[in-house]
Structures are given as C-alpha cells and as structure tokens.
Length: 399
Image (cartoon, rainbow, N blue to C red):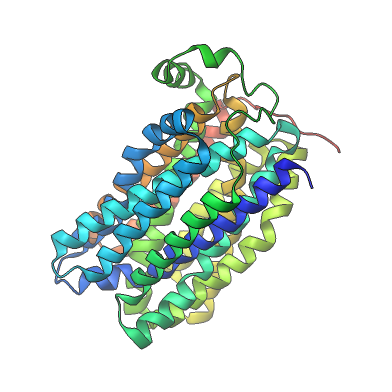
C-alpha cells in the first residue's frame, strides 16, 4: 500500500468520525436553539456563528500547518471541537450556547481546512478528482447519516445528547489524527509541492491566488453551496417540514440520512467524471441541481416527496463537493497548497455565516418559501457565471 493511499484511508476515517458527530446535531440544532425562546433570525445565528469561527480560522490554520505540520494541527482541531461541543450540551443561556458554538466551529474549521490541504499534498491532477471524491463521499455520508442517530438520541435522551455525541466524536477524531495520519508536509508526494510559492510569504501567496479569475469563481461556488447547505438545508428546512408536513426529528433525520447514502454512492463515479471530463463539466450542473433541489423541498406535499428532495440534494452535493475542491487545488501555483486550500475553505465558510443569518431574516420577513426560492435562483445564477467566465484547469483524461 502506497503512502498516499494510507494517508487517504486515515483521513477518510478521521473525517467520517468527526462529521458523524456534526451530522448528529443537524436535525436538533434549530429546535435546540428555539428552546431558548429566540426568533428565527437568532436561530440562524446558532448556525452562522459556527461558520464565522470556521471563516476566521481557515487561513491561520493553513499557515499554522505549514509551520507545525498537518498531523498535530488536525489533532488540535479535534480537541478544540470537542471542548465546544461538550459546552454546547451544558449551556444554560443562549449567549453561552453561541460562545460554545463558536469554539466548536473553530475546531471544525481547523479539521476541514487541513483535511483539504493534506489531499492537495498527496494528489496529482490526473488522480485528484478520484482521491477527493473518496474523502468527500465519506464526509457527505457521515454528515447525512449523522442526523439519524442524532434524531434518535434527541428523542430518547433529550436535545443536548447529540452535542455530547459530537464532543465524543471530536475526541476520537483527534486520536485518529495523532496516531493514524502520517505527516504530509515535506513528503513531496504531489509533483511541485515545493516550488516557486515556497519563496513567498503566506499573505503574498493568497494575493497571487486572488488575482486568478478561476480561483475566485470556484470559491464563490463553494460559498453558494455553503449558503444552500447551512442557510436552507440545516436551518430552514427542518423547521419548514416540521410545520408543513408534521414530520418528527427522527423522520427528518432519516430523510437526510437517505440523501447521504445516495450521495455516497455517487461520490466515486463523480470523481471519475471530474478526472475524465474536466472540472467545469461537473461543477456547473451540480451547482444548478443543488440549488434547484430547494424547490423540491419548498413544494413537497408529502413525506415521500421530502425523501425524493433529500436524495436529489444528496447526489448533487456529493458531485458538487468534489469538483470545486479539485479545481481549487489545480489552481494552486507550485508550493501554495496550504494557501490555496485554506483560502478556498475560508471563502466557502463565509457562506456558513451569511446564509443562516440572511435566510433567517428573509424567513422572518417574507416566509420560508421566499427564502428557498431565492436560494435556488442564486445557485443557478452562480452556476451560469462559472460556466461563462471560469477557465478549465484540467481538461480531463480518457484513462
């Protein structure tokens, strides 16, 4: 077994464990926040503050990993995430809960950012789509399947139980990082890992990246996907279908888990498509369909329709998660993996901030249908913008 395969397997295990914990809080987060007696916009803050923490730590964690190493940085992220999650479960006031969510988000941001840096370290353009798709498949599967045990935990042990589960999962992720993940900083597995970029400061590297139209556009795609995921799927839809269809937390969790299973099935084939057809041929339709799936949730007249919407979104999110990350890694000049992937992550995480707050405000003013419709329109528009103006970074291979 090659070093890159061993690292990939370890990272898949780490992200699966951590995101199972994250996924377990998804169906209960709006309800848990609501239990403090706050309005919809404040419920959105519970999601947004998590994304704000991820936004702030993305670039510093990439720089930190260049100094300390990928492996210890991942382990530190797990410990921080665990601290915040256990505190969420113990919070007695809403401001205290928000602070705990920020700490949990900071730890998660470190893990997610350095995970993508590691993948950039060990992959080459010809195989990047397939490697990222394996990792992305585990990520989405865990996030999607997590709501099922999370809903059951909440039903039988209370709304705080999923946060305790997330804390335990984060501790396990820290252990996996420390004992199972091989250090990739300095391995030089990917051609050009050490190149011209190594001579520039981290800030200078980011400046170079942000002058590339394709890198900026793919980061906007990532931001839009994050708005759709956290603003609509995680914040609005659980409350919307609970009120409109009378669904329980467990039923909502099952739907999200089902979508995740189909997303996992689509993960590796999507990686093959990304490597064979090129990045744009996958990014554009995935972004459009992901946004359009919000219309299915909005129009759902029954639980079966809700399940179909979950499946459509799960497949689109799986396909759309691989290609943008591969495109961003392709865009990195020699020696700039950490700068590229942490910046890409940071812009995407901005969607975790503006999505829940903005859409939560729209729900308060115009209702959830308007918020879901706007999400769909913006996603389609961004997909078309990328199609028109983004250059292809890898045209594909017939192998």
